[in-house]
Every structure is written in structure tokens, then in C-alpha cells.
Amino acid sequence: MKNWQNLGSLAQARNQNEEAEKNKPKFKIKRVYDLIIIGCGPSGLAASIYASRQKLDFCVITKDVGGMTNLNPYPIENYLGYHYVTGVELEQKFEEHFRSFNPPTIYDKVRKIEKTNQGFLVTTESSNFFDCKAVVIATGRINKPLNVPGELDFAGKGISFCAHCDAPLFRDKVVAVVGGGRTGLDSALQLLNIAKKVYLVEIGNKIREEEPIAKLVKTASKVEVLTSTKVLEIVGDNVVRGIKILKDKKQEIIKVDGIFISVGYGPNTEFLGNLVRMNDRREIIINENNMSSVPGIFAAGDCTSVKEKQVLVAAGEGVKALISASEFLHLGKANILKVVIPIKSKR
Image 1: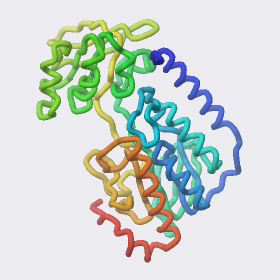
Image 2: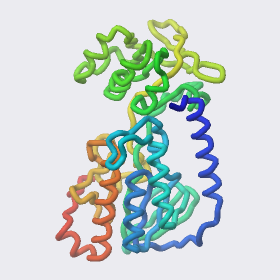
Image 3: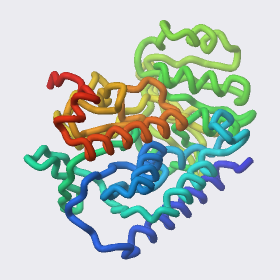
Image 4: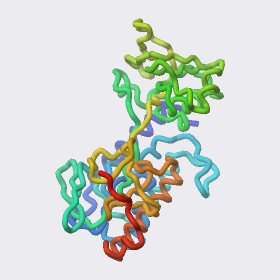
């Protein structure tokens, strides 16, 4: 099992490789496509492979390849066809398959999507503009940071956003889980049989008592719950050594070997504004055919209202979204609406 220092080196190497890939002139950028796929995690990768096989006129716009799968070195034992594979290894297989089709890929970040008479106008942060008839949004989710000093400095050096992924790296260590909501409780649960001691740090005056695992976590002998506690700073030298907190108007540093930031996550949908209907978490609401409230805009994976945020689910949703988008392109708007009934917009 790799330790987190090695994982940090791996992440750094991947970033360097991706930067090199971005700077390679692969093809001449078109400005008009039938379809644009935004995002290249499991959903976007699956959609891209299907779009390539169907020989659609499309391109992929993404910041990177693999999405959050890149951050998961822990064994995945429930992905069909694999008895044992890490997230990083699975992403490498995804990427190998993806690149075998050589899909047109633009490494950029989408700034906004606008409705036009012909379809949609997609604008990127690099001020590139692309017209298309349909869009598949597969932008995934982003972890919420603490925004405290030291958080960026110790990324990959003792800080983790995923207990499912990284808990085994802290066997018999003292760790802190920041966040007493659903995500924090789940992180603490993952660490119960692994870590030596777990501090559960919550800024509010109580943890989520209604969660089924709350009692189990609270009563565990190795868990110390710290409510009404604010994280001020993450401290260390080459790696994390402690966490500075404010409790009862007093500051102190708790010595820990690792910190799991578990204050939740949000969908990566800021660029959409109010274009499509979303739920209170700003996840894109889709119907059973992955169509949003705007005909021609389809979505898949962790950026949508689909409950389960799993790699296998995301990949399947990407396929569904692409098939629906393909039908939309081939049948035309008037006919597709008879087959794929969009959600009534309540924007």
C-alpha cells in the first residue's frame, strides 16, 4: 500500500503530465459541433467513448481527465469486472480506452452556456466560443474546503477529502475529522477500525443526531467529539503535525497525523447560472432519460440529482445521457420530445 507521501508525488506527476498534454497541439479547434461533452470524469469518459463509436460530430471540453477518480487510491471492489482495483488504476484504464478513440479534447473550463436559436453557445474561460445543437454536462462535484491557513500547503501531505479512499493510510495514527454532518460521520465511521484515535471536530453545537451512524460514532471509545469548535489553521513541517482550533474562546493545537476534511461537497454547476432547473444543492434535475429542464441539455453523474454518487453509476449515467443526446440530434427536437419528455421548468 502506498503511503500518502507517495500519493502526493503521484498526484504531482499526474498534474505535470496533464499540463504537458494540454500544451500539445493535437488538432485544429473547430467552433461548431453537433454535440459538446463538458467534463471528463467517469460520466464524461463513458459518454465520449459512445459518441466516438457513433461517429458523432462532437468535442470534449474539460480541465483534466479522470475527475475525482484520480483522488481515490483505495481499492474499489464493486466495479463490475474488477475484483480489486484502485481509483487511480481504474482511471488509467478509462483514460487508455478514451484516448484510443482520439476524441477532440479541449483543455479549458466552461464559463457559461447560453441558449441560441440554433442550439447553444458555450463560452470557456480562455474566451473560446463554441456553437452546438446539444450538450452533455458531466462536470462532477467538488469538495468544499475549509479555507484556512495550511490547507493548501499540506495537500497530499496528510490532508484528505476522502476517508473511503485514504483511511487505510492512517492505520494506528491519530487523526481529525472536520465536519459533524453526514459526510463527517461517515468519515469517522470509516476510521473506527483503522485509526488509533479520531477527533470529530464540528463548528456547530451538535453533530447530526438524526443520522443512523451518529450514536455508533459518538459512543466509540476512540472518538472524541469536539462541538462548538472552529478550525483556525493546519500546522506542520513537511507533513501535517496538528490542527489549531478555537474552543470556549481558547486556542489550542491538537497533535494529529492526518486530517480528513469532511464538510461536504457541491456539484460543479456554477457556470450554468439559472439556465436549467436545479434542486436546493444546485444539482441538475434530470428525468429518466437524463434530460434537463431545457431540451438539448443532458446531464450525468455527480453533478445531477441522481442520489448515488458512485463510479459505476456515473459511468452508466454517462452512457444514458449520450444515447438520449444522440436521439435528440438524429430525431430532431419536435420528435424527441414525444419520446423523451423533459422536466417542466420551474426556473
